[in-house]
Amino acid sequence: MSRERRLLLVVGVSMMLLCAVSTLHAAEESGNPSSEHAQELFKWINFAIVTAAIIWLGLEKAPRFFAGRSEAISAEIKKATALKAEAERRLQEAEIKLANLEKEMAELRAMAQRETAAEVERMRALTRTDEQKIAAAAEAEIEAAERAARLELKALAANLAVDGAESLLARQLTPAAQESLISGFVKSLEGRPH
Image 1 (cartoon, rainbow, N blue to C red):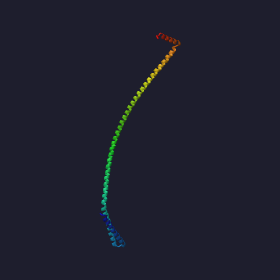
Image 2: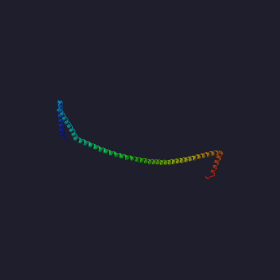
Image 3: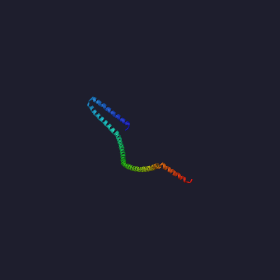
Image 4: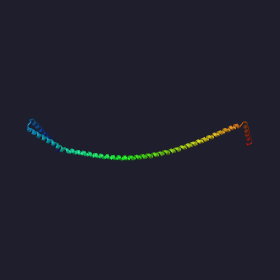
């Protein structure tokens, strides 16, 4: 229905209502029985106008209103369906990741245990190597200390031997013995050819 027709219909209905109201008011003031009959007639006319307006609104506006609501509801249902599908997809991905997470955690634990065992073995090997180096160094140091002690012991023994010989010589070499030694030496020199 065009805009002009709607405006014309509203103006017509308004005029009929105005006429009905003025006639009703005039009938009430006169108070006669024909006015009661007119009042009854105007009530029915008023009822018909209101009913026609309601029917017109129902027929004119209701289909568009309900079609719009239907489209909106349908769009919301499609949107909700898409959101539900997306949520289910994400849930499945999360469940897969969770299942994989447990598997990955088990793999990480196994790898950590292997790495720990390898590190322990490496540390043991390093410790054994260090022990061997320390033992070799200690053995070399002991041997060097032993050699030094032997040399020192030999030097001490030589010093003691020299001191003992010196002391023995000093005791045994009396002035008479010295004189006899010197004269024996001189005699041995005299008998030698020059």
